[in-house]
Image 1 (tube, rainbow, N blue to C red):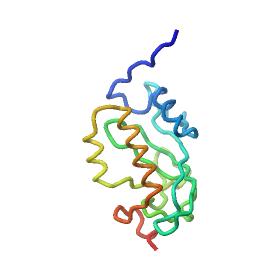
Image 2 (cartoon, rainbow, N blue to C red; image 1 turned 90 degrees about the vertical axis):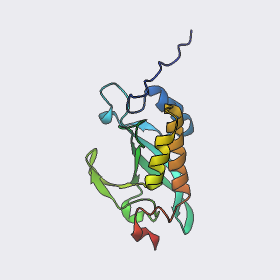
Image 3 (cartoon, one colour; image 1 turned 60 degrees about the vertical axis):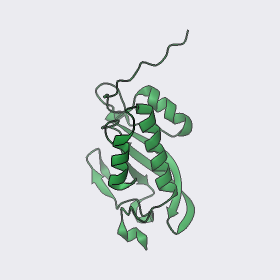
Image 4 (cartoon, rainbow, N blue to C red; image 1 turned 45 degrees about the horizontal axis):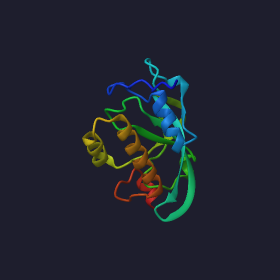
Length: 160
């Protein structure tokens, strides 16, 4: 007998086990950061690898090791950061300079601009469907890494 996964309430923040398993089909490197598991069991922070390009002027493929904060998902856009390559090696205009964040105080990680305020507004207008919002965010993030947008610059120093 097969049991369907339990229905996840719309308002439950983070990613459920079934959502993680579903996304790991497309992104096999996806893993929950166990130290950031939310009190109700959902993942608050995950890691995943995605391929992108080096910069707007260099289409060399780069593997980006990402940390994504889902603690406010689905009501807010998740926030993605690059932990590897190192800040000094990043030339992508949509990736900001490295900083320390409270959930990762031991390393400088670089925030990724996935479309600025325009994407935030678009995300808020998406249907209240967790799966739709999750897949839309991953698509937006992947497109950002593959197609640098010089109109959404996170780091002006990387424009050179």
